[in-house]
Image 1 (cartoon, each protein chain N blue to C red):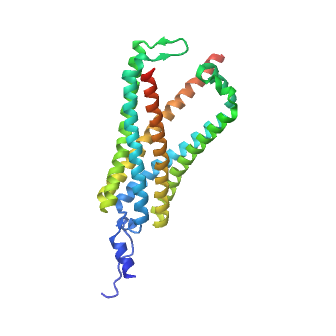
Image 2: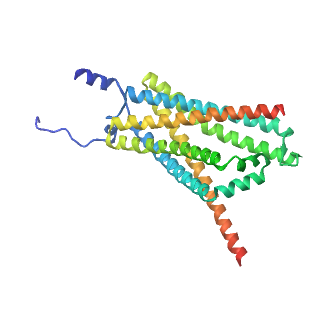
Length: 148
Length: 156
């Protein structure tokens, strides 16, 4: 009992300023996540309705994408589904971070606070992996550009 | 005197004292901060790569299917675009980097001032992203409105 009290006293608590900062952080992140969810749903709907027409238009515009239509729509559809799924998971994690952290502050719930921070970590992990991958592609394209 | 009760009304200051940065939360925040640092560093390097491509790579590049050389006007436009996008990217990710460094320091030293500083940077990062999103959405709505109006004018 005494040990628990000592541990609690030694821990760093979320103070008034920290709570207010977290509240506002959560407000903005919730806005971003909701707009992100709507945007992903909107683009998925557009792709579902006019996907084949868009692929045909792209392949006629750019000579590099001629093979796209012949590759079979399946690969393109799978690629788009994976992209939508990853983007959806990222914004869902951001939304969960906002809602759980908000609830944790409102209800003083340590468990929800930990869950919220876990979602923030997952959000940054996925973003970090994507950032590293895109940087590698960038560096690859820059070497190609200077070699050609 | 003995019967006198302590006022039960809690001040806002007391409201946050029940949640703390315990071991579990600290490890999650540390993980988030280290990945956020990776994101920010990748963005800084990406902005640099973009600038290098804009300054040195465009002169040899070709446009479209007919191998038309990029003229000097388009080149200036591309360099300006790269400069602006690099500046915006660096500005946004500077706050993410600050979140990562300050929060990690705060978590390691159990320093609530540093932790709050880091969380404040995260708030600024999300706020800037939100403002940019609002601007983009407004421009998109304006474009749709202008498109609809021009369609309406053309129909008459």
